Length: 58
Image (cartoon, rainbow, N blue to C red; front, side):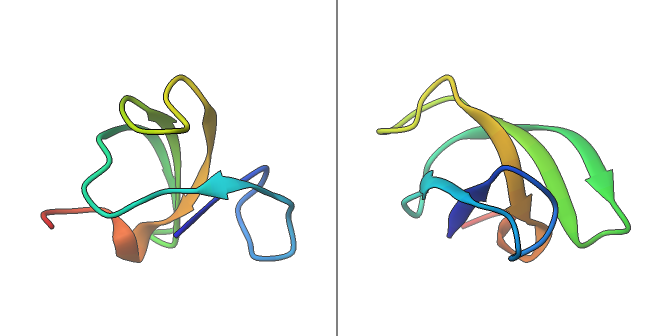
């Protein structure tokens, strides 16, 4: 899944998040996009938007 600069696929990708990466959700826009901070993995410390379908238990 992509970490993006904004809440749609039209925004630039900041990186790929691997399955199982820990994130903290700070905002959810219409249950479609979540504003998150990445807490583990290669993109640790980055902030961005992620498709909400990928949030939840893995």
